[in-house]
Amino acid sequence: MARAPVVGPEASGNGHLRDPGRTVSAVMGLLGVTFSLVGLVEIALLWFPLSMGDALWEFGTYGGSLDRLPMVALGLGLLGLAAVWHPARSVGAVRAVAVLFVVLGVVLVGVAALYITSVPAALGRMSAQAVLRVENGLLQRAVEAFAYPLAFLGLGWVLWRSVRRPA
Image 1 (cartoon, rainbow, N blue to C red):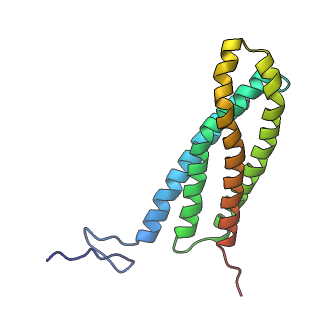
Image 2 (image 1 turned 60 degrees about the vertical axis):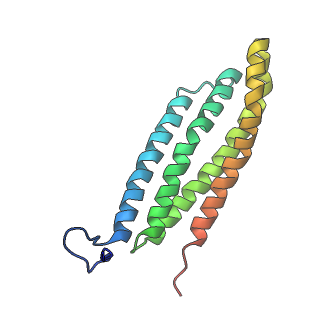
Image 3 (image 1 turned 90 degrees about the horizontal axis):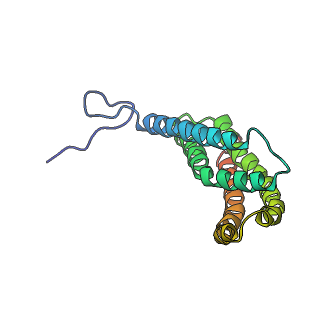
């Protein structure tokens, strides 16, 4: 009969996990940092140089940002899980990720307002055929503009509440 692997700090030797909590936390943390940084850099490259006032630029930049947001969300989610999962979890790390989620949620609400104001002007500058293609994507953007900020604010709230204050 096969023996189950020994896990935990007391395990030693080949084929045994010394501290699975730290290992899982480290893997999630490394992936989280990687995904977050790559996603944020991709979004930043869309926004700079700024061309505020150009409706087509605002329209395209917001849409492109939403397309890249899942990588940032996944990265921050992994960072939050890594902070919560770590055996010696740091209250500061969990709360920092919570604050990042809330800040991004609030920024997305502001960017959505910018997008809404740019849609009529951008559509007015497009050909009829381009307008038809863009109109199909407007429902998708509307759902994303509602869902992402709501999810980010909710995740920030959940992470913040996951930490108990010392008695």
